[in-house]
Length: 595
Image 1: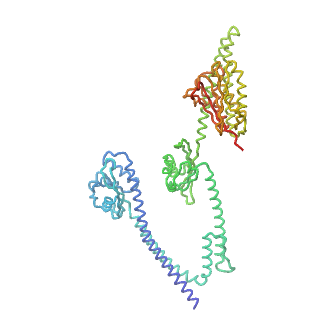
Image 2: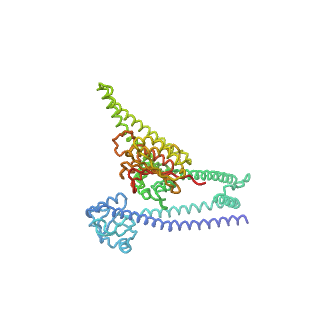
Image 3: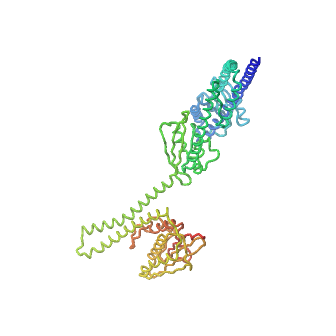
């Protein structure tokens, strides 16, 4: 008796719960889902209508109503939608009706969606279309001045029969599921109600715990029990899920670390070309908004080239990778590579990788300019050497002393070439040294005095004197000895070279608290503002076709600038102050940190 009562209670409760659940599902499926389908269709139609309205407003002015009607017909054909434009009840354009037949259409001013649009700006209605012979959903909005066409109402119609068919099919399928479920529930409840109460409770608790993340829970499998295989399967499933979740967590962490650590920007797109994820490097590159996810690349990057590449890869993923280069507003150059892939559902998706190649492009440009300048500097003296040598060979002078002038010119040009090559090597060495330069505290006074002593014999030949205005201390700065001496030598050599006979070269040093500024000023012709910043460029000369007696290579100041930058300072031309007579070059170096 008790057994039968227990079985009956299980049976009745099972039926009651099943009927309740099926009733709720039936109501939800037929009412709520149906309402959501209608609402979703309306919202999607409104979105499409808004896009069409925007396209019309952004279009060039139409020639006349017929041109506008042709555009509407073409747009409706591409979208698979019926587009209508109504002016005071008269149909001006309809994608499903030729322009010549528009006059035969009825007055549309009393259509519900048109009336609602005139009153509230937009309206919608679902009814049977006599023109198309099917139920349609109509959505309309008002439109002002659509480019040479009178104000009116823009309407979009989409078939509603598919929504109705889906609701009807849902109801039919649910009835069959309902009947099948009732029959199966009756049979199963009678067969398994005797022994399932305790086991079901255990399995429910285990399943709930596993679902909450307690993968260590295991069911006890009694030998000979009818639920032993199921218990073993649940235990195996828990172990498998625990292992897979651990692997997924590890891989997710590794992938996140890789993406966050990359200097390249990464963007993943779904099958519809919408952004699914991106890394921090891409955010820094384009300063992305918080609403980036779910949007298209052109919306967040404002670059149509990227969107075109995405569209092509999604349309033809089998063609493989694509690469483009774009220039950003901040003068950076980025190479974008698109790689299509397929997910577990065999749906095509995309990964875009953004490589910042600004430095590489800048290096390529610098290399080309360097080669061009070096070729120019070497070609001129080489041409002169070749010309004079051929002259000596083809027309040798009768007296050896007559060929001395030619040989002196050859020697001067060879010396110039030697100085150019030596300066190029010195510049390359200074650029390499900057990467691993060891700075120490050195006396600026000492190296200034050494440089003055080195150039004094040459200056004395032209009666040039030096005037030093420096502090009494040692003027200690953070520098590398050879580099600092080279800068003093170059600036003093230039000052002696361009000073007039009997001139005075002034050397000064000023302590501004954190650094010391050294200046060398001559009384030569000076440097115009036009050339004041360019003189630090490689091979730059005021007269680039001149080879002077000293064999200047045009690299001296470029080497000085590189050395000073390697030492953490800066160098500039400052020859326009009050009382300045010639060129005045200054450079600043940091003082040692106080301990």
